[in-house]
Amino acid sequence: MATAAARCQLLLVAVALAPLLAGVAGVQLSSRFYDRRCPKLQSIVRSAVAQAVATEPRMGASILRLFFHDCFVNGCDASILLDDTASFTGEKNAGPNANSVRGYAVIDAIKTQVEAACSATVSCADIVALAARDSVNLLGGPTWTVQLGRRDALNASQSAANSNLPGPGSSLDTLITMFGNKGLSPRDMTALSGAHTIGQARCTTFRDRIYSDANVNATFAALRQQTCPQTGGDATLAPIDVTTPDTFDTAYFENLASRQGLFHSDQELYNGGSQDVLVRMYRRRASTFFVDFAKAMVRMGNLAPSADTPTEIRLDCKKIN
Ligand code: HEM
Image 1 (cartoon, rainbow, N blue to C red):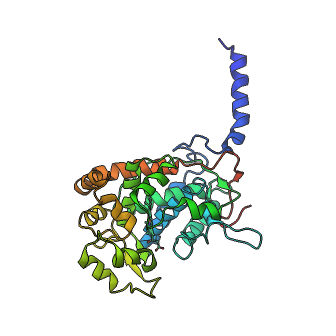
Image 2 (tube, protein in one colour):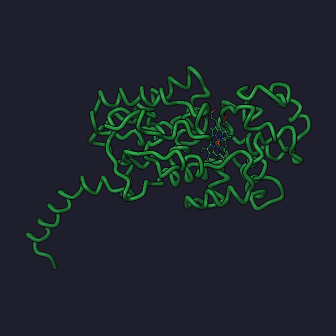
Image 3 (cartoon, helix red, strand yellow):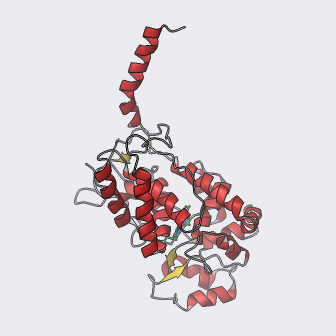
């Protein structure tokens, strides 16, 4: 048995190592990470997101997507927030992000408030994770406890952003594989896809679907064709959920059941394959969808940058310190 002195020494070593360990990717996150370091953090984020969503409901959808696009590219490390410079190419202009990922200004504004309350303490990555949770909840969806203690990367990868994020033409097999590559199950993937119950998409992302897909509701395709012509109008927006695009509900799964998924990849979840049964269940039971979505968001939020990624607490989310 260790003596009291030995135990005390161990404790001292642990305390001394803590800041170093916190810099190591993959370190255990904790819901109480900022309880003492920055007690006002969660209320600052919540009220800023509430204001942003009240001004423009779509912003909730945009922030949720920002989190997904951060986490799928070398972990949830705020790499997506870094601006390009003369000597640095980040992720903002990667194919899946350019001209479509939004919400950067909201995150920057939250960061400014958080820095004023507790400087050099809270990572941009944690702010995005909290803001995504609050976005979902403020639009009528579930809430969950966010695990905290992420650190911000000093680098970003445009090539990983181009290759790790699934596209709207993806098959079910591709979706299952790409989420599987991140340690997420097919069930996580289908639950997370329910995020498409909010937000908007550009014509260029669903044109093939409404003109060329077999498995599409004809009335729905005709409706979307009115504002998304075969040529031109690439940036024209349409709601991803045809019925309630500003409410986080089960309408996305309802739409899939009536072949009104906006993306080919959406409809792949209900096309006679392995996820049909889950789509039917989520459609019937909002509570099951909400529980699964929250669990999958926590799992996605656990994606960490590789251990050799240098990290810091960024002071300005747009650039490294
Ligand atoms: C399953 C694979 C997925 C594919 C293929 C996909 C694809 C897309 C595409 C093409 C858009 C429209 C982008 C544009 O207009 O350029 C979009 C929007 C969106 N996606 Fe996904 N997505 C997927 C999964 C997810 C996940 C996991 C989440 C979050 C948990 C998410 C949240 C959103 C949201 C909220 C929007 C609307 C954003 C806004 O209005 O600003 N997506 N997605």
